[in-house]
Length: 137
Length: 146
Image (cartoon, rainbow over all chains, first blue to last red):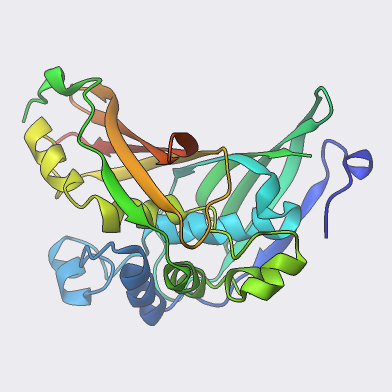
């Protein structure tokens, strides 16, 4: 599936994705996959000693979940830029929803650039990660 | 602890990273991205790809597995790695990355700011041969001590 630039407009909403609840096992899987073994993400007693209520998710896991919103929508081959700011912590038990919308379309020579705002929040609307993405079509 | 500002602009020795399909699957599995193009080469080909492409945040995996020395470099600069927070992460994609690619990653100190709040941005340029395929920027901050 491929997006048609002629059918896109500023303000269009990217189809949202609701993820399964974040679990402690998921954080362990992410640690192993990504190679980020900071025990703040995997060992509850360590996280508590560090002053937290418990383990917190890797920010990069959440950026990866938000990335799925983009790559499912546009196809990964069309993504030229993706950047995020980390806003608040995600903990096991949170259910996250990734959302986005088109902010700007810039026609170029033989292609167009589509700039979008993307973000991922929990079910109470707390934004965890927000960012910008540029798609080339 | 004051930062050693002489590190601003400094480039660290390059490292190599071989992309394996298994790591792409593991990362997508952990993220919960079940798109079959990442798991099955044939599904990826049907969608116009050469093979299963590396997902958008694969650079972070390459950095952690390929250049764990970054933690020592940060400590040398004077960054308190126990207190640092990840503020921003930004990618510029020039070419798709595929299983079998042998990439070279080179980290440099893109910006460094000292003060009550310390900030540092590390830029990694990933090349396949002489071709730049991906530029990653990681910005970390160390909040003021209480």
